[in-house]
Image (cartoon, rainbow, N blue to C red; front, side, top):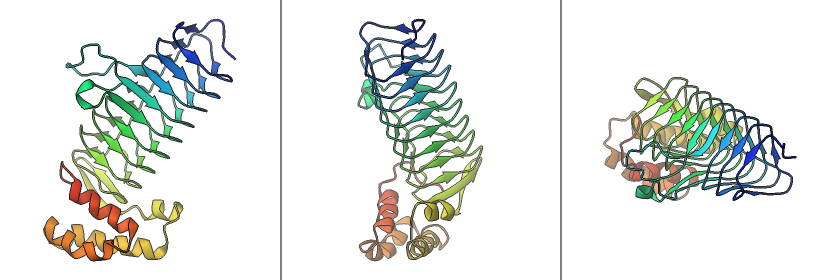
Length: 256
């Protein structure tokens, strides 16, 4: 399963059942879990841990040093979970010591061609990052997020679970969960109702979230006033509580 023309450092740990195609390069301090595949001409450098059943397509650069002028060669990490697809020409950088030292990608993510995931990013599970989506350093992406092609996320921004960005969105602030945004600069355009439906949210939950959206973003209330109005209902609705808590904790302000 490992082609003789691949270049593999003696310090790499390759599990049973891993496929490494011709001319792939696997560096020192790389661990690759069972059932994963590294295609021809892909480069994986360490320290990097890759879980089971991932596929890294040709010409991707995974686990390279962070693009941060403060980086001075420290041992920082990239951690990738299970079942991820990383398509051609993706670049995924390790973390920096100033922010915990780890870039982390969860499970079952679909990362399309030319995506860049910078140092210290945290990507959850079951996301779709379409072609040319770009995450600056320290970005957090929640579960089931879909980023349209050529979406740009500013450093230190967070994108809440089940959010959706249209192609070409430029995101300078946090995107609360469940929202659909687009534009340069991005603005909200209501709930990602189709995404909620596909992922099992009930009509009652969606109706409650739609009402909360109007209270938060269309009522003219201040953030403090809107949150105070929603908190009683949030105690009895987990999806609404997730939304309210995200906005309360947002550090960069939120897309409106």
